[in-house]
Image (cartoon, rainbow, N blue to C red; front, top):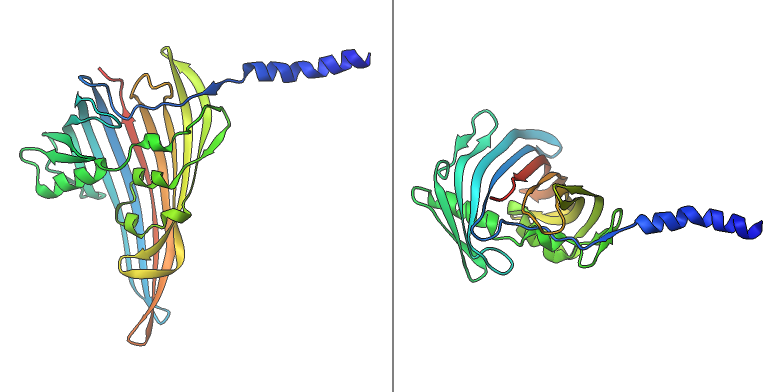
Length: 281
């Protein structure tokens, strides 16, 4: 009886172990050479800044900024970690304060990205130098694949993301003020499922990185920049299709003194973003 009971209790454990599967995660950042895919990018950022002198509020600034972009990306020439050459034909490109956002100069035009060394040179007839420079900044970070695990994982597993992944984050002006040595970042495989014969998965990435200054002002107590992103895409490297949805948060204050007056700058920034790429053709 004792032996039979032990065997019966062991059955569910054995069954669970048999169903467990590990995945070596591979996510394509771009279509294959000669192929193209449609991409949409949307972002919304709320900013609230309050300035006080000796405890008295003297200035408050609130704004909501949006970005709405759609383009067809075509890889002209393959590369090692990223394409050697690609083009983007923009059908939509607008950015600015909500309610009065304006079209960017690349809207309705084709922009070429060509790798020179480890950086892209960006060109486009009729596109302003400023917009070309902004596009270069947006593509010259490290690929998101830097955030993936280096070994196979099962659903529910987590992994530590190294500080080199900071190059993959869109920190904007905060990038140079961030202390990468104290970054905490983690990935987790939330779900794995089959879709159209491909192995898809849902990955959650969470990042916290302290910011030690705002512009020229040092921050007495570091302010954490926090990001959470959910990636839903093929994890077998079979396609560049997929979507990434996320949110960012940055809230804190700077205390300083000028001409004998105590100055407090309180800042609260939060936003959401989504990037979606269709199947390559």
